Length: 571
Image (tube, rainbow, N blue to C red; front, side, top):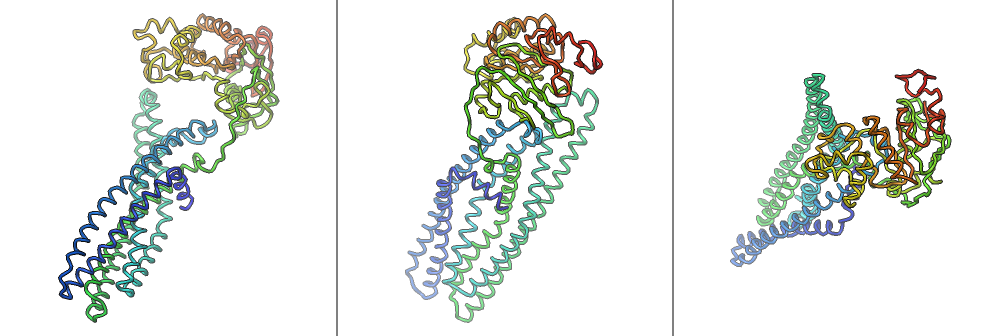
């Protein structure tokens, strides 16, 4: 729990001065209201003694009530505003951390779990800051300050009170561990529900095509049922905590009233003192009976904080200094590179190659040869287990993410399109570029004529995933998005597979003309595509088989397609 509380403290740290100001104001509310029982004692004692000057302390009680109302209102409003700012800043920080996570992070954590942490876990923390903090302040203020006033009225009864409060603290501590552990389990099950819901929506058309809607529904119902059972178990623990607080508060009230009445009857305590003590007691009993809720919120928030810490390492991982190295010329050199995903077989196995600068280079090989892994290594998404990669003499890991992003652009296998306009999709990597640059990139990608035929032209909405475009058109649109940045290194990761031979040849001619002096790397398993390149590197089983000019490489016998050709088959 202490680790979770420390994490929550780090979240509030940027606003600690205003937050402490808000806590001080909320604490002052209880100092103000604790003067009311004393004024009540004065009024009752003067009435009991037959004195008539009790009007002034009675008016004081009214003023105390009004002052308490206004200070409490201001303090809670200030606390709510700070909570909103804290969570808003924290969510931005969390989203920024997701954007900079390495490739391994997304292998370890599903997108559903990430979404759940950003939405659900942060919502739990927000509820604690908005609704739990001021209740904990009330509990601490009343429990600490009230006994000081009460001791001046009835020391013996105050000792009884302190003993019961200590017992309540012990009970709360004994229940807090199971509640926090159960809260972590509940958050994990909620993440599982979120994850499955997202995946089910993504594969909805597949489920319908294979008539598996019923199976998906049953599995989702099972996830929801598991979450409901865990949440019910957490509710039972919270009910036990609340019930114990109520029972001990009732016992405390009965004990104080019983002992107090006996002392009044014996003449050791005045009626005014007993009345003031009972009012103080009612304040303590009130906050103690309600303390189960803020304690429950604190335990849930600390559990959510621990889950966020577990996923993102926020607040504990040191940030490396950002280097702004920008190598030039951007030639690529790989020396005995090895990489394994930890499943026994190396994806890249002793690969060595020096790729010439300013050329159209094709890396060719069958499915599973290690081409996509090689792309991730070149981009710095993953780090080699052995060997080295240099871009212009510099390791990708030594280049800051900003400089690396401007140096290398990757067009991936799957054409992902936003639901916005064609112009927005093409200019995503360079949002402020003029429309002329957008059209130029579209012409290089051989998609400009298609765009001109659409009713809205560049402002046509493509729909999520590019619903209004064919597969080849979507690929060319994504190619235009990569071209518009004019990066020194452009990697095309098998992103032209849906193009026909004539369109592909037109694209390659335009690429060679437009990107003179810049390096373009084409990843493919097609010999026809590779023949358009200036230089070809053939790989298989994670290592280079042969490299050189296209006519020399493609005329050799290579195991380039395990499905279509046997080992030693002609390309």
